[in-house]
Length: 193
Image 1 (cartoon, rainbow, N blue to C red):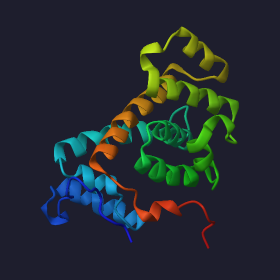
Image 2 (cartoon, rainbow, N blue to C red):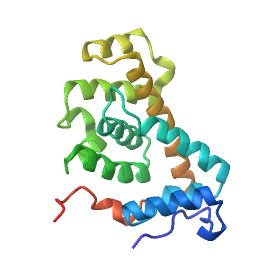
Image 3 (tube, one colour):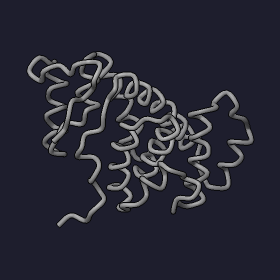
Image 4 (cartoon, helix red, strand yellow):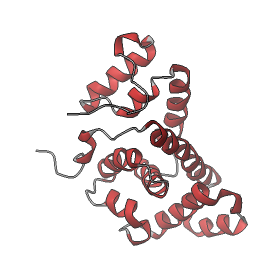
């Protein structure tokens, strides 16, 4: 069902990839039933693939003051602002699953300010959006707006780092012509039978 990973840069054949990258792709495929196109596209440059996913995992898979669903909210909101179809669709699917809410990703992608999220999450996304689109204007006022919501310094760093990292990811996805796997569109929308 999945179409080509990218229009501009060919995905290397699985059997030509270094062992560590091939193993990661096969593990992802076993877990999800398909290989997300981001893995195939970035495998074009193995050293950068390793660096990208090491930082991705450090930001997105750790425990901390932000839930994994909140981390995905940041990705969806900032990726929508950056007009990254791949990241909105792929991370929207992950957000729906992690939040156990079939509506949340669409709400956050279209207008997080009207989404059914908490005031804390809205403050988090306000900060994330400013980092993503206007980071040079971050001031003490932005940090002060987060304080009543109980964000630690590490949480604030995570919000900013996720926003900045996915600005990179959005630009890579857009310039390569990466398209979302068809499988992402339905994930987390309907209850499993």
